[in-house]
Amino acid sequence: MVTMIVGEIANFVAYVYAPAVLVTPLGALSIIVSAVLAHCMLNEKLQKMGMLGCLLCIVGSTEIVLHAPQEKSLTSVDEIWQLALQPEFLMYTASVIAVAFFLILYCAPRYGQTNILVYVGICSIIGSLTVMSIKAIGIAIRLTIEGADQFAHVQTWIFTMVAISCIVTQLNYLNMALDTFNTAVVSPIYYALFTSFTILASAIMFKDYSGQSVSSIASELCGFITVLSGTTVLHSTREPDPPVNTGKSLY
Image (cartoon, rainbow, N blue to C red; front, top):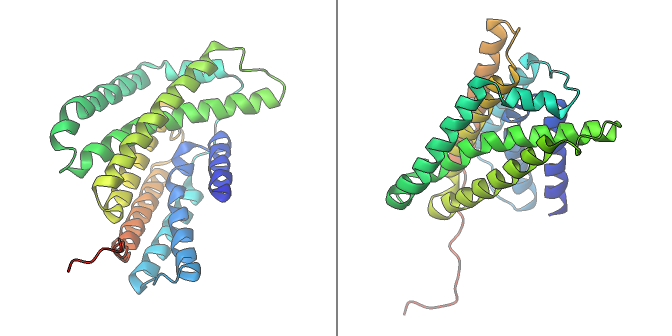
């Protein structure tokens, strides 16, 4: 639990100093560490295809880092608020909210138990707004530590309320997906959708790819696809958990 909390804090700090299009795809590296530690400490077998999946994740992550855009310098929460009020990002936010309500109110009661994309889709699209809000809060904290108090601005508290609401919704439906479907299937689909929507949201709000060459953008997308392939391969080779022994005999 301690290492998990430290890891999440480090992930939070990463969003402050690096663009989301770089930080979010690199989350796949935790899968590699988990697989290696499970092999060494829990005696879980890491198959050859699993090793190939780890290698693909490393290669893809390296390609993403080498071609990632530079983080733009922001000096106040007001600047982030203006970025959030851009017509194209407002349109994206409205689309996310509309799709989320449609999935929650119409699709989830009817197809949630049979279609994996319903629950995973909800937490993925909501997650993109979570990352944007978390990034704004992180920048506000950094600027406040540097001496420019950002918590006197109402925008900071709006970002905080949005982040809390999105996190609660995201975790709720992610847990529902994990309770309903196999983790080996949920994890790569969630990674693909969550990362894709986060990259899209960040590209719209922060203009991450502005000024980058077509070759750099293409290389980063290829890196993301490579990481996604590695993640899928790694999860597909995962051994199923042994059945829980309840101590009851069938005879």
